[in-house]
Length: 298
Picture 1 (tube, rainbow, N blue to C red):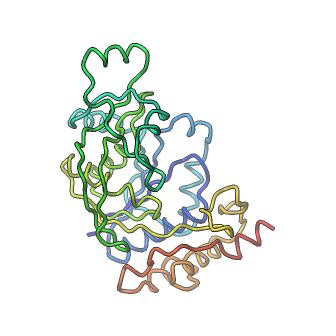
Picture 2: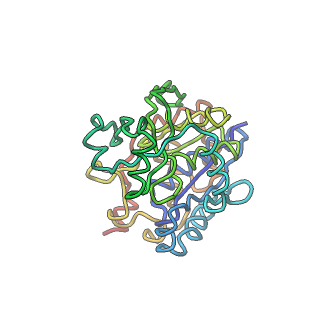
Picture 3: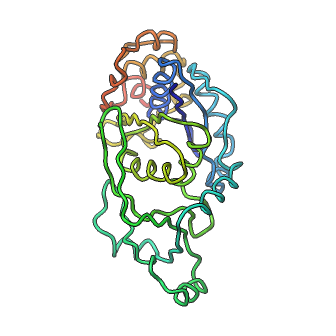
């Protein structure tokens, strides 16, 4: 049985791109008789506090479109012990490098990500103590040059390098790549629908899943919603959230379902009925924001 999840960060209202990804994941899970879980990724407490009320609006927006989830909402801020225990079970080392030092030492970035070159892996105990006196270290996993292959519904097998990525930041906050994997394993997630911009991180996260005793999920990375300039849709593009659009949710659902190749479905029941048998139908294609958003912004 497919167990998919949606995992928004409660720092800003969901825009059309976020909602499209949510709809795609919901449809893939429901059409297969599976479960769709909800996780709020609220580890960045400062940003969450600054955006008070966003979580409630996000959940309300999803519900208004008919995207109901199974079980209780899971919040990362309530799961810190799980992350602590996971870090304790892994081979790790302290890293004292600054972002500038990493940028200067690392190879050219791939999809915006610079692989860590392992600078601090072989530091002596004396040198670590010396650096610890002036700088709080991050904690990195010791992957020792691993690589891993994931299965993506659209892209097929994708193999990627697993560098010594951060598990705990220098400020003590658990890193995204750790928390999402720990949560997915604990929640029994075996299918992950998300934007294609995260495809390059999938091998790293799947490798960590295996290290923690889980089975890597099947991925469905779908295309991003783009603005008229071909850039990823963002709040700065104007009316991109349900509240900004001030439209009936059924109109937004029709716009989103049309962008997924299902026709203008005004209810989730209609969208489910329009689902083809081949779940690769999304094709990972990008979609430029439609007339509804452009008209509302005018």
